[in-house]
Length: 220
Image 1 (cartoon, rainbow, N blue to C red):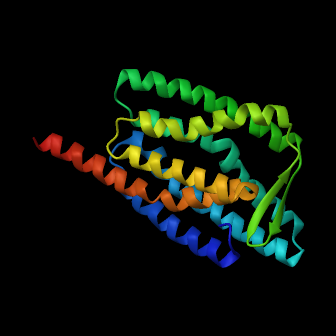
Image 2 (cartoon, helix red, strand yellow):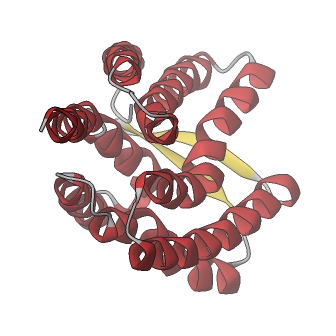
């Protein structure tokens, strides 16, 4: 979490608990990846808690580096592919599946780009006030090209999905991105992941609703 180590650890525990509850709501294999999202956010918040401690102490450089990559790999590499894929797996409409597949391909390209950046360029977490900033030297031209694709791949699938209440998740993620980009632009990756982690709690609600609907249809 972007405010302090204790907040990160508490947030990780709460979000992890929600993720465990979401897994229990899974009744079909195609829901498993979507239900896993809160758990991934919980791991990210745990990693940021470790980053807070190592940066404050000025020691444990190796642990700090590992924690930084544990946070950044999901943030930059996984989310652009995991979000459209998890929604695609649950989708039943053929037309929507095609649209989601195209977004998955775009998100996959973003994932490859950021994986390349994490391997070949430097990134350094720094504490600025009550936030963590990830200073990097990624190629700006390509960053500017892939950044809007990242946003599209991680938000638009939530509106394309025909799964009940998925659009609510999309609205919350979209609003959280706007808030983070306007008020915390220098710390966007950390703050937006924090907001998204908290919002991911609605995944339990979405799965509960979808499965209740499916159960009702079976009974009818």
